[in-house]
Image (tube, rainbow over all chains, first blue to last red; front, side):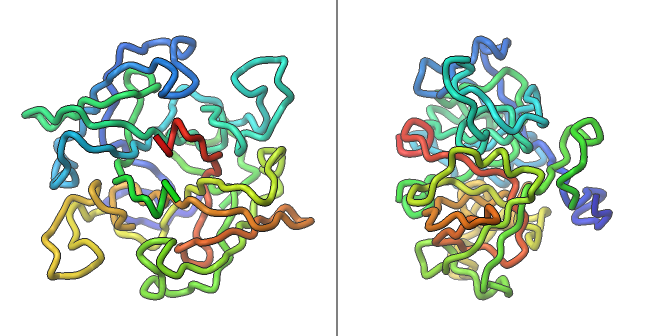
Length: 146
Length: 146
């Protein structure tokens, strides 16, 4: 691990959660495999320390949420897609399995509401309650829609 | 970086680079703001320790590369979009600025070639030479194309 300091006492490769998901999903087995498969609305609570980074964000648009799938295994390199043993094993980089070397979740969501406390109501989000949020990005055609 | 580090040794929020970008881009000022703005082809060298995670990946498709923008500042919450002082300050979560609390880069790229050493030739990629790669994900309509 590189001991270089980046900001305050952060190590180079250390993530800093900027918020948390608040969701009715409390068990991994309850989570849809994809947001489009019945994932519920959820709230994204952004820590006050990062509120300025939301400046200019408006309800009614879409964003890409990056989460840290803290319940995932990081030592898994191949999985049966959709956890179906009938599916041949494939490398996790060809799947959206939460189990992967760096379990970053990528979620395109609609921003339905931004409340007075700066919380974002979004949907659909297939992440467990309490999942750390590590970044929020705009949806740019050139980056994601080709 | 240590691709062989065992899962148990990892702190919860510590990223483990799975590879590196090899690019002609060696200065941040040379990097296009978006991949679509003249970014070159680049090679993604995946560490041998993670080669199994590529199983099933084929040239000719698209993937989402997640990188760790190691040259970025992590203490910046607002920026002038496109680094133009004429643009009003906006929260970094509404921009693709590399300067953000967790500088994860998101890049949708074409996989042009996978060579015998498991390196991926991709384009376009607006990341500096040496940028750590932290994840590779498939492009799923439900996750990214709406």
